[in-house]
Image (cartoon, rainbow, N blue to C red; front, side, top):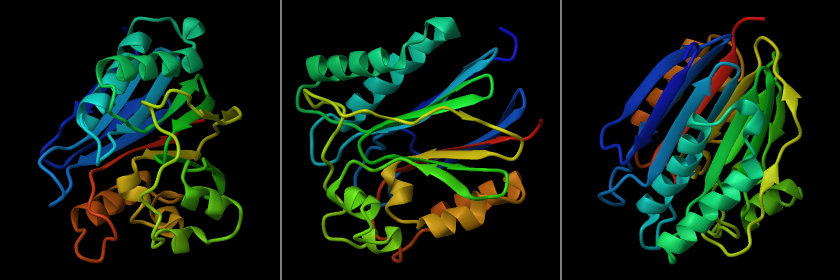
Length: 261
């Protein structure tokens, strides 16, 4: 199919990154296993683009529960395979999230995973999230115009103004998540549609990046300036992580920018 792009990464042992082009967009991705936490990378990263439609996101299996890796794979595969064989006009994303949740509950009844992704129809973007993986948009002036609310006590406290985002990184309850794929009743956050213009940037990532890097630092790296340089700086920051990182975890993110009008 013309102008198509397919990428599905799961249980990746080695740091993996690349930059891809799709239509008027440049897309960078990075995935990295935790350093010491466990033997498996529980993040799943997926990109599916065809003609005028692109969906890209991450699922992060919940640690402390069995089959987190399998749950994230199941969710990513359900979305990836459905979109792969469906015309853009027929894609129903809320129903698809519910279907993915039902499959996890049926096959892995004690497993949980986050899900965060964005769907791009032509130049119109909408994002969806369950759990504490995050999505952030920047306009062509490098200003943050949207960030989903991580579905956690700390995420809600930051949104309410009780904590700054950076203070939230060190909060004792940072690891608590209220709402995950695998729950019987889901809370799905859906953003309003945004029409992307040249220079607009979107980042979708697992909590491995958002639990360790402040929004200010992310903004300084990828909010504006050279896409390639900013992407590489962020990848290098993840590769170089040491004792100063707050949480050893798998890291995955996708960075998309509209590079042509």
